[in-house]
Image (cartoon, rainbow, N blue to C red; front, side, top):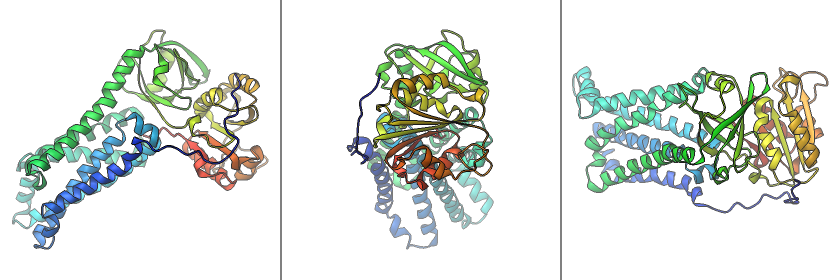
Length: 459
């Protein structure tokens, strides 16, 4: 089927304001409210009431801000559908990480401030022992702080690169347990929790966040998996180490999945099935069928090769905003490298464009690694897609182009392949360094950064 032309003007469309857009301002307002509570309880006045009171007051403020930022961080990745759709999973994940680090340093400042304050009580070792172990609920809080600190260390880029997704994700959950362990000492010992209205504020905040988190992260996925009754129908080998899993289900149209989106998938195939992995759909979804294509790079992904007919599938999603809905220009450029062709293949199939409006550039190392080529050829013939294949090994200078002559400039080569790039929406998927190279080349060639769309499945 050929879709009619949707737009002929390259001006950005006006996105209507939605309730989910209030998430950012409300998060800021939450932290402002925490500062106001501290001021109301003589926090600002205590700064000028002697060194000990000033240090203790600043310790209280940093602890409150650390707590409110942790709550903000949890809500960012609570998988609230409207928020995910408005902000995008990648942006929320990156902001979640940034807020997490800020919250961590406020927590460290909170701990150090009280250590300094207690050091003036005489025997430093005994004072700190009472502070971290013997005081009311402080052993729990100390244990929770250690858990949170461990998760933060493992979230540093160099540490994440040395871990597989599954164990990292499991360890990451200890941050939530750490927050729970720290909560009792706030309620029982915190100066800003003594008044009834203040206690009510924090209880509502904690319990509300917990309800939202459990509702969207656990209850909704369980309901969707039960209702849609998804099962594996077959597994196809697309290339060495690359498999397509075909899945059928009941009323999958109610998920409102769009090409370019992804799910967290769990295949009930034995021990370890509960560890979910994010994979994008690789074909346009239908009322009763989905397909996901997976490269076997770890223990979890390698198991898909042995999935059998009838294996139950549990889902969390859909997530992601790299969909045709973001298109704002008359032309569409899809660029993929390696297994990054999976969301691009789905976008190619059902995005609204007329013949000649869509161009596909596909980078791969060797012919045996070029997946979906017959499908791409059939779609291109049916819908009038301009296809450019770029085989070859990577260059060593950070270019997005393959090695070998001619060693063309990145931006010049892209502009030559897509002459009207200033009126084109660009959708990218591939390894992060390669995406950065394409993005830089597109910007130098004249593309607007707002018209470059990516999804790196950040974690």
